[in-house]
Length: 630
Figure (cartoon, rainbow, N blue to C red):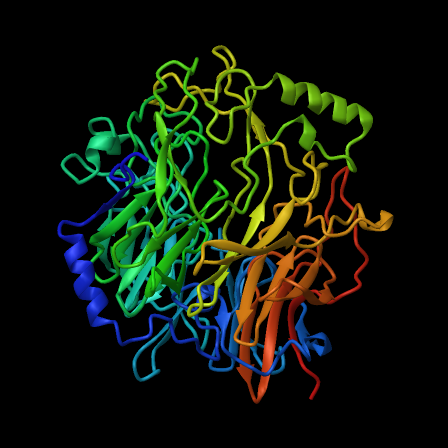
């Protein structure tokens, strides 16, 4: 086993510091207290999506029924529930407040261009008099009064903060906005970004803003400046031209320790790194930062010099396990690689060895220089498939002609595992850049070591453009070699899936032992149900979501337009609830007036395209609240 130093580095004296921290909190539960509301994206600062409410149980969950619905609610969003009010997206790009007991609209904001559509943040002052909603729209951070929906003019400059400023780039030439809302911790909003995808993209700095004034409090540079720690893993002055390494999706906070765990994606370009030689810290990493100061506590890089676009983007899960006879607080990071990486939460030390192993070399791409090794967890086992060959072609969906076509392509392509170098001829990656885990894909019981992951088994076949095929280069960029390739998936339900089932899986990990407790297909392929084939998993990479309850239930939404309810202990399906349209984004759960509610968003829009299967409206759409009968 090779040294882990390449991937894992803590601060100077990190082990000693961690020992002091561990001792200080030894008598304090590491689990984030779970409110009966849903005040944060993913349920709480720790993103566990765990609910301690006990009214809905294994015995009565099948009796859930629609309590009310709000027709204008849009899917692809995780609604917040605070003080009896639901905050959600509606009518395209408006933020609305809805009565959580009745579904009646209380107020609606103006429609915002480029709304961060997957969620917003809530903050209130200690006395509750100042209640705010914070979110980004078109590169701007905004604050609204949660009671009225009106902008707060004292926030930033006339109510907005320009997120493109302070990035060592011309603000007019970069983009800086994520569709995910970030994390509120104390009086700070900790925010990532979705940058441009090309040469000269913005660097993906992690920043914290004062929720009252909008002033930037701290910034962690994921593409280091010259002299910063990690700058030696990039070419000289890389920050002037290389971007990305950004947290475009989820993050999690350990409120007891005051640490925010931030997963990052690839540097840009996504598929060519000839002008960014080196490991490229802090791309494709899990970074533990002091939530109050932005100082790095530790980091682990899951992929060196990423040219495959295998980001870490699902929420890190915080739970406590029994390991080597002692209780250990851990953080578990699922990735597009299909692996779950598990670390001591305080020190960053891997719970089980992660080995640096040689990976395929040999590239015909001018200027490219690959990392000779990549990190591979020895435990737990991956949740997504790691190879795709002609034997894995779908026996159900493809026609004989299509199967023969793909058989020839796959047989001809370079196919040496998930880190096969990309070249000018087709290559196969499994899981591909649309596979593994994604935003909304993870949940956990914070106290018992169980983590749940939605995984996508999606192969990718791609190549780079050859010289002469290249797209126009941006001004000031080197002669570019850019991606022509495309993921071989069914395009959110529009195109046939080429891989045999299961397409989408739900995996339960017991991290006390490092074993997979159970795994099953999440949902069904709507094209195969008429011929009696079930358990395939949904045939689209639509991002659903999970909720874990203290009564042993696991709620999951899937691309088959159903809510699935499982026994979290053994994976047995206990109930399903049909929806009237596709659902995306995470469900929410709350208690109000003595009732426990499950909150789902479902679109009334029907899919289109040659392989789309319109579904009759057999269930509710919009914002839908389920509860037990009164």
